[in-house]
Image 1 (tube, helix red, strand yellow):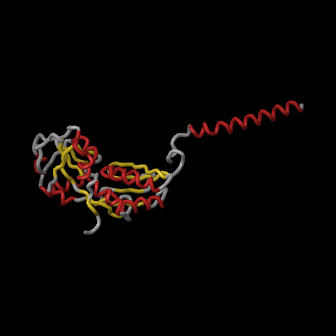
Image 2 (cartoon, one colour; image 1 turned 180 degrees about the vertical axis):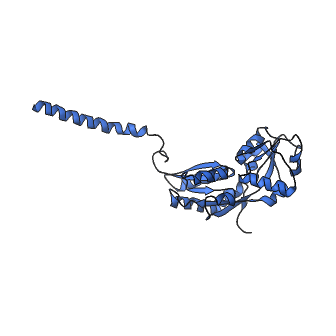
Image 3 (spheres, rainbow, N blue to C red; image 1 turned 90 degrees about the vertical axis):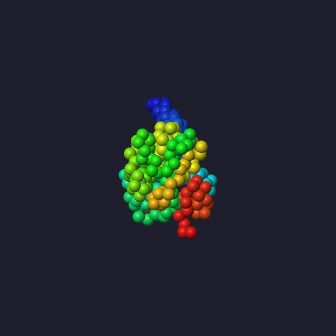
Length: 260
């Protein structure tokens, strides 16, 4: 009888040791928990597609000054991002390409930059389009953003101001999709932001037009009230509004939101 008790006790000890040994393996198989490799904090920023290059650069700057923090971006059409946030998607910061879209999420935001539309044409499309009125020519394949997206709302406004009637071949959900179609030669022209043409480099050519001054987009940003990481969210907003952040945005082609 004593012998059986000893064997049972040894078996229980062995089982506990096996369970402890298995813990690292179980943890390894749990998948991504949303934090940086090795632990830490993830700051989630929802931002308009036109901010992709400048905010990616600012994200690296933020990570460099905040050890253990990773900045994860969700870039897309502002209206779609606002809808995601409204439906409960976890986000710390929202940067929109228009105040109207921002108001769907927050009434307490700050404008940090301005942007305006240009006509994007394929790099080898010299002479095909020279002004906004050319976009109404029959047979010309023009792409724009959907009306509910800020770049689409701006396009609608400039067409109305200029009295130009354009029948788009397609309406895309964000400005990068328009730029891609033009760059691939799938469209003869598209209306995109000045910053997007600059980011595309030699892939497309940008044509300025005076009517764009009637539809300049303000870009607001906010640390969301229910941000999982409220303090970090406010620090990221401060970086965007700082002289350092404004310099990055200016280099990307954005116009200053500051008076004068």
